[in-house]
Length: 313
Image 1: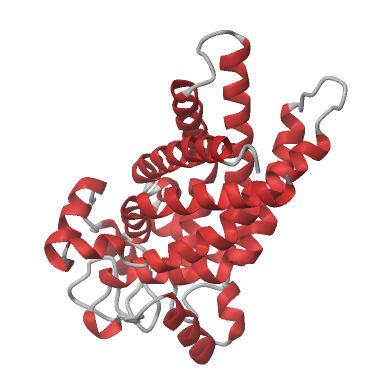
Image 2: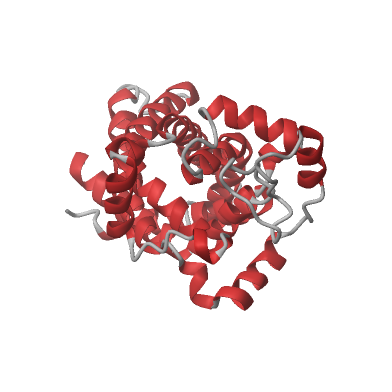
């Protein structure tokens, strides 16, 4: 059961991650929209950025003038300005990330869940499910952080002026360039945030899916079939989105930052709230839900089908 749970989770995660990648890219771009600039960036074309020597008042005036943009209009703009293929920028990093991160967390969650299940009743209470999710998510994130950093940078590259783009050829090139230019530790930039987010997402997503599914079946609302899997997984995706979005915004900005832009996660959070308001922590929430919902549905529906296929192995 141990190895098989990793294989099942890995297959489902790769399919879900790659199929919803465009939604994740839009989410990342929205989370970076209006971001406070690094002191090395000067441009007249992007109202979200200020001159290095501008006063705090001028900075606040500049950031407040950033036009709001929605996920649909942003998606259309990306296609118009960068081409439809741009929606899949960084998909190679997503593939690697899901292979490392999600395979680990999905497999480990099942291992812990089976280990902690009451042998007499055959049930596992919610608190233990959450505990299994926290442990599995944290370990998975530590394993997959290099791919996560590469994915964020590749997804965000198209929003930068041409002269400032990193233009990575793929996830391998991204990782090599980071190691060469910024050191090996850059691969784990924002890892504390990644681990915190992964713990929250995994606990909320996997534990709530199991809880919703059990509730539906025990109360006779539906039979154990596709309908139950879709309803339970979409509800789990919404719970995960609400719980993780603030950490996700800060994680995205720290991973994407130029050297010296922030002194860490807390500094990023403070600067973001001061410059853009507290609700900036929920930037990209709509595409997060729109991505997390379909991702979680595809993830668990695929997982249930893969389990059926591999039942005899």
